[in-house]
Amino acid sequence: MRRPAVYRSLGWVDFKNVKRDRLLVWMAAMPVMIAALYRFGLPPLADWLLDVHVFDLRPYYPLLMSIYVMTAPGLIGTVIGFLLLDERDDRMLTALLVTPVPDVEYLAYRLAIPLASGFIVTIVGFHLIGLVPVPLFDLTAVSLLASFNAPITALALAGFAENKVTGFALVKILNAITMIPVVAFFVASDWQIVAGLVPTYWPMKMFWLAASGEGYLSYGFAGLAVNAVAAAMLLKRFHTVMHR
Image (cartoon, rainbow, N blue to C red; front, top):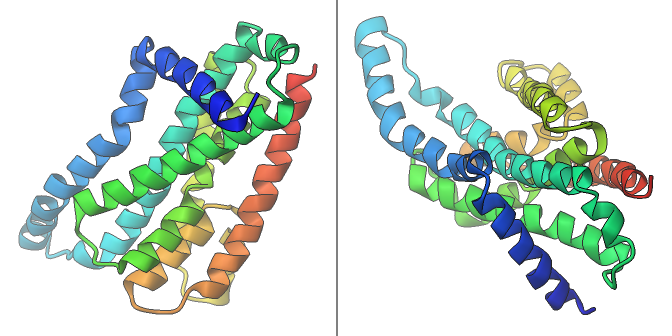
């Protein structure tokens, strides 16, 4: 079976499965909802904090936007991860092994869809928010690296959660780990690089530098390596789960 046909068939199945699950529909819509909250909620909040508490929130807009840049693809990855859990519970993964769809094609699909979807929602959401001016080239580079959070999240859920209940618990843990780089924003010394053990640090750092007009290519290459290794390890784990 050729790859376009595989993607169309699996994509249509995923669409129907998401459509019939209200929780997954809600989660898939969350990036747009968060973007709207940022766009219409942050400016009034910043004005209120400045007037009432003499605290200027605007210098922290790049930090808040970097959180969105990671949250958007993470939510897409969560949706895909829960789809994978449903497929595993329904033994669809086992059935898939005896279909004409090769393992490599299925795994490529499971990586490509969250990557592409995570990239799109990040770019679209950023422009909907429109609070931090970043050149399109820089935003594209950041979004490409940030989009790795989608397949990483999906594969982590599919590889380590036993069911949806444990999946929700794992999502909370993943969200906490994802937010560790937020602390690095307030660390001015070289110790900030310790947060680089977390894959989400690198696109967030890239965004902070891009927003301030500084160079970020070295962080981009390092982040690509870290995220690629994390994705490869989780893909190996998922492949093992598929063949249990």
